[in-house]
View 1 (tube, protein in one colour):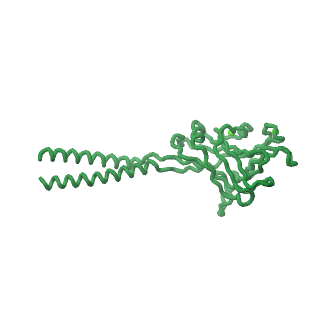
View 2 (cartoon, rainbow, N blue to C red):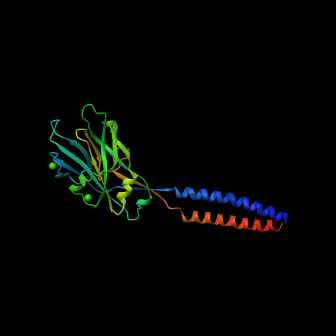
View 3 (cartoon, protein in one colour):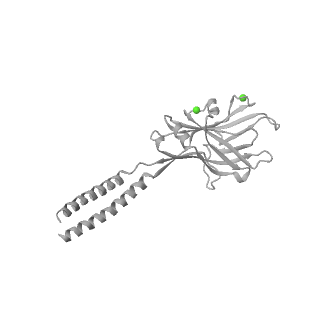
Length: 249
Ligand SMILES: [Ca+2]
Ligand SMILES: [Ca+2]
């Protein structure tokens, strides 16, 4: 009888360790992430000639750049506001509620820098797209989701990843088939050129198409849940047997 109790106590200790181990496994599974990278389904530059608030020119659809700039004419150039527009096709299985973070990856391949500036920035605004680019997309600037800031000139060239506002992005993902981004430049603060969807990724990491990166929480794998459940049930069963043994002592 004593030998039996020793055996049962030993079993209980072993299973308790198993239980802790299994819960740890479960905790790791709950925090696992899945990265979804999406290239634009369509993109284009839109230009407001004379900067009168009306975007009246679609720049060539098939060019390989998106330029963002704005000059009011005070520097001896014709007033112009040019913006980059991108719409990313969202898979129907993406769950906005499980979005952990979002970022915008792009490749800077050109800048325009007014005298005295050492940094250049463009603002990124998000909107719910429709798979088509219209003039209304250029003024979809209610939700600022991020900002690309680079060193002016050649040192700022190459790959950049801009963190996006997760809550705003999650809200825009809901009930939408396309996620839109429009880039804007403050007036007389220079210009930034990034590669568009037609730009191929090069091996030097200095050129490529824009990418919307979405990171989602992955549901706990079914197998981990079963293991946790079995561990818990086993411990309860052994504890019950231990209580029955002790009551007969
Ligand atoms: Ca205009
Ligand atoms: Ca659109």
